Image (cartoon, rainbow, N blue to C red; front, side, top):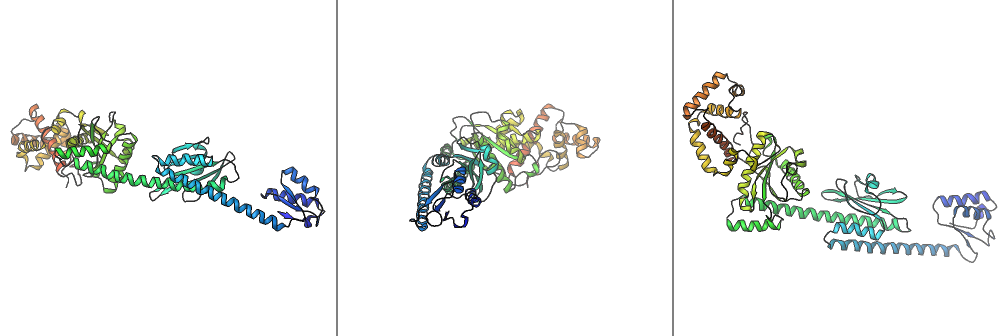
Length: 482
């Protein structure tokens, strides 16, 4: 403020109040003209200024106010030019980080160095991705995380200025970037545009990562689907090379895994639910540092997974259990040429898990009957089943009775209850079955053969109609999908 003091001449109280008002409202200094209205700066002004450490300077009569105004305007213009040049140089330095192997980390580190500030990068879930400086993430998280839009978030941390901004892409919010600035003449003026540039570059890095992940997902799915189409020797070698480029080198055996809904009525999954399940499985395997190929197969999630440690129940379910899925694990393989057989094993294990209520079942731990079925030639097994059950081909009621009887471990009372018939009626039907098949149902030989036959029939039906909806026939066996 510039004044000749005319309005407060000989008014000490108002002179003091003038200094107080200027100081409290953030003015830089008071220039007092002498030689025209007053010959010196009033004592009340100087006393109050010393008390508040507020600058007061004398303007001699030879110096017009306009010269002071011109000087200040020039100085301010010089400051603006300085800030603009600093910001442009910092933005260029940040952009150069895009050429590095880990551009996200480099951007944060460079912000820290250039602004001499504490920098915290939060992920989309609010977790701390990177932290530089003494300010703890918990000190700024409540002020920053959760905000939307592109406006700068302002706050205070132990007397230092807090600035934050969301990092966004077309996929939504990718996280938040926060800086805690040290006091300085240009800290805030430089900090805001540089922070915004850093957030924009981090958004670009996230967008590129999304594009890369999308391309890689397609490549992984393509390789997995190709290896399930019975490739020949040369094709298998080529597929193994492509898998190696995606991280699966078979230095340790891999396994095929299938995820499907725990509720048979929801299998196969609708397209939207299937996509959500695929993303959940990919996130689960990536978090466990597993190498994998994932794709949708017959309305289920299928994968080839390679991991140094055993694949535990927690690894294969984890957060996926929230989607109501269970998993089946096939035999170990050392080439993608064996993936189809391992997938068959995994589906058999998945059926076993459904029957037992387990979240995860592994082929290696199946009972001998199930293991034999998975290991034998499916066409031969199907032919044997047809020969054994041929006499019941046109006897739907008797075939249903036989299936139910075996499901309840040959318990007559329970089978009759499930079929809603009298026990004597059930015994009559069982006698008819014995006569038509020319066997005794209490013979261990017959029990083993029929158990394998019925299990093979169910698996064959699932394999032939795997692309449509699965229904339950009410007695625990899955009917053919239609």
